[in-house]
Length: 349
Image: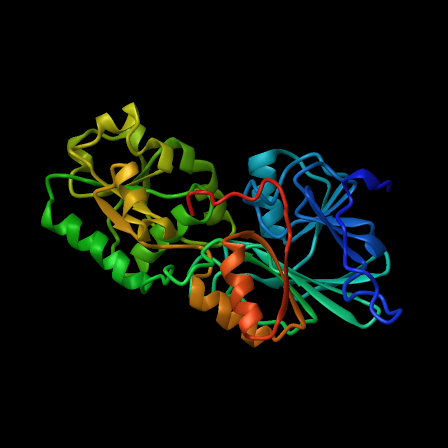
């Protein structure tokens, strides 16, 4: 397919007549182009061939000619973006696309999320997408994959971001619910991944009471159940009375926390599950009474630990707090570069 040379980024010159490492991978503002496969990784525009790491809107979109992704990601994309032209690839499976061997490896971010291992002429490049390292009962755990180039996010790429144990945050939620049984706890959580994780973490802690949900959560919660993630008894807020929801947990999109919709709830204690709740100002801006520091992205220690374990020759950083992670790489004598991709958002993590 044709590439617009006007948008091509400038690369380092050849060293001693040898091609630059990863010269067959070209970052453009709209995504990462894998030339010998004639395919793009997580393109923000419709492309003929797309390799998609997971279903969040800043990595997945509709309209591609063909989409290679895990079956779970393809199912999520079908619900969110309509019918795809899918080529399902299981975790651990290798497929040949053009001249490149492509393997999808668990990323631990959300259900179906994958790192994309690209192998060409003896070089190994891992595009990690978004990832986290701590256990998550709703998705397969991250797998360390040694490579020459590791393309990493840096959403929480500052030393201040060190996420607490998930069980501690879930316990805070349950303790608050028990302390004020005449109220409900309204938890803002991103509709894909975070909401289902919060529900499942509550179940893992022994909370088997019904959990109420905003209508925007229904399709994805149902899909998670269809894909084998048991979430227990869920009830729509639209079919419940205010008294029925007293002493219960309600899950909603972050945008609905202070919306007119929440007035139907019994004196809600406003909570939000996000890695950004580490920053008190963010909690205050959203009028969050109970910040829950729960992230689906790696924190600072997990980012740096992952790079050490992967042991790449180079680290390419796609989005987030790139400067601090690049400085860490320099101190640790790891070559790094920043990729200026558009459309990569913090989400409501």
